[in-house]
Image (cartoon, rainbow, N blue to C red):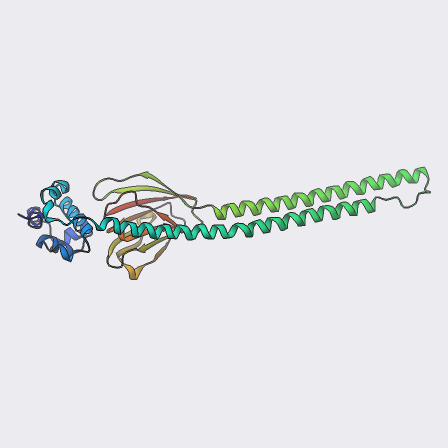
Length: 300
């Protein structure tokens, strides 16, 4: 009995229809029929042939590893696996290089702005010092002793007032410089991603913590393979559906506003054909499973 007949027999024994199996595995019905009939050339590639057969086996209660070992001679090798993933990795590296280039172009501009602020602050300081010195000079060298005392008193008063004004100006300039630096640091702070829990099994559920997102956070999903369709569910807080349905190149890129969301749930079939990013930062899949569920915990 070949592998397709064995899988079909197990499906019928458990009274599972092809429509139900499609919903459970997120594999298109025509691919399931092709597997049962042994028409592997209809499937999108050798790697997906083996992955789809494993997913089918798990869904009908057959150990996928034992099945692959028993029918090793019937199944195609997996040369395309590295080709598929290297293409995705190359795309992500190019995207990361673009971000680094944009960040580098900001640095000279920030440096010039800070330098101009420093020059203006120094100029104001010396102008005020010069003004204070001119106002403090005695008017008449022949004044009496009492007049001289009064003049000294005025001079001290003027100097103190000018010194206080200069100090206030310096404090204001320093405060403005500090606020500019803090604002610039916040703008340059990138989104960080941490895997809290890595899922297991053929359809793993993983938990990822996403930090440093903006107040107008955007979740972006893109199709990385024009020949593959993926099933995609995106759910926000209070089980609100943000997207549900087939996802392909025509629907890509899909941008979803997740500002104000504490967590977002993703249910992705054919995950290798879908790339994910938040505020322009790529989210790597914790596992290489075809069908994956991700819980994104959003934090500022």
